[in-house]
Length: 439
Ligand code: IFM
Image 1 (cartoon, rainbow, N blue to C red):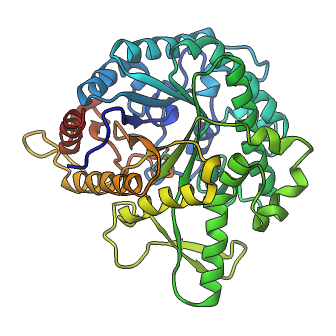
Image 2 (tube, rainbow, N blue to C red):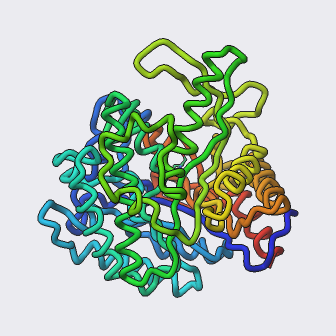
C-alpha cells in the first residue's frame, strides 16, 4: 500500500452535465452540450445527458456512497444554465436551491465541497451571443461567479473557476469533437483560449471578494512524446506540449504566454489582462490520465495524437503510463518553482469494459491496478520533493462521457442506466480500504 500523510486529501470529482440529468427541470435551459447531443453523429451512442445518472434527484444516495468511501472532499461543478437560464442575468431560485441542498448534504456527511464553476456546459444563450469568442462572455461569467459565491461561499472549502481549459478550447473549438462543435482555425480559436483564461482570472477576483477560503486552478497534463525520431514528429510533439502543458499554465502561474503561442493569442490581449489571469491561487489541480504520442500530418491541423506504442491501453485506447504522472508533477515543480502553489491531483482514473456478473457484482481489477500504480506515482513525486496535498478519482459514478456517451465507464460505482441502480465496483472497496488504512 502506498502511504500518505494523514492530512492528505482524498476525494472524487464529477461534473454537472455528466451526472445531473434533469436538463429541463426547475427552470434550467439548454447548454451547448444539450444542443450538440442533438447533432447527427456527434455522440457515439446517439445518447443525451437528459437523465444521465439522475443525480439531481438521487444526490442523497450518491453522497451516502461518498461517505462510505471515506473521502474528505467532493469536487463537483455547478450548471451555469441551471443558475442563470437566460441572458437577462437573473438567477433561477430553484437552480440555486438545488446546490444549496446538495452542499448541505455533502457537509452533513463531513465531506468538504470543492466547487468548480465551469465544466464545459456553456449556456446556449451565451453561445448564441458568440460564446468564448466574444469577450463579453467573460463579464457574464464573472456575474455568474458572483451569484454562486453569494449563495454558496459559506459551505465551499475550495473553489475552481474552470476545469481543463485546454480540452474545452481544443475539442470544442478546434477539432469540433465536443460542444459547441466549432472547427475554428487556430488563430481564431486563440480568442477562445484567451477569454477562457481571462474568465478564470476574473472569477478568481470575484471569489476572493466573496471571501473564498481557497481557490485552485485546474488543467489537464500529458507528457507529449514524438511518434518517431523524424524531425517533423519531434517538432509537432514540442508544439503540442506547449499547447497542452503550457499555453494555459504559463499565463496563470507566471503571467505571460509561451513565446511559441504568442501569435495565437496576442491579437486578443488587452492591457492588464495578464495581471488578471495570473491572480494568485492557493492550490494547483492536475488532471492526469495518460501520456500522448504525437505525429506530424498534412492538413489544416498539422498533427495527430495517437496511442503510444508498448503500453497497456484502457478502453479509451489511452496508455496506462503512471510514470507520466510523476513526470508531470515534477516538471511543474521544476518549471514554475516558487510560483507553483501546492498541487493536488484533481482527476485521475480510467475506463474499462465494466459489467455486472451473474451475482450482480462488478469486478474491475484493471482499475484497481491503475489506481494503485498512479498512487505510487504520486508518492514518487512527493519523495522527489513535490508538495502534493491530495488525490481525486475521476469519477465516483459511471457517467455521460461527452462524445462517447455512455460507452465509456469511469466510475468507482457502476450505474445501470435503465434502472439507475448503483453498484460499487471492486475498485470502490479497494479505495475505501486504502483510504481507511492511510488515516
Ligand atoms: O470525463 C472527463 C472529464 O469531464 C474531464 N476530464 C477527463 C474525464 C475523462 O475523459
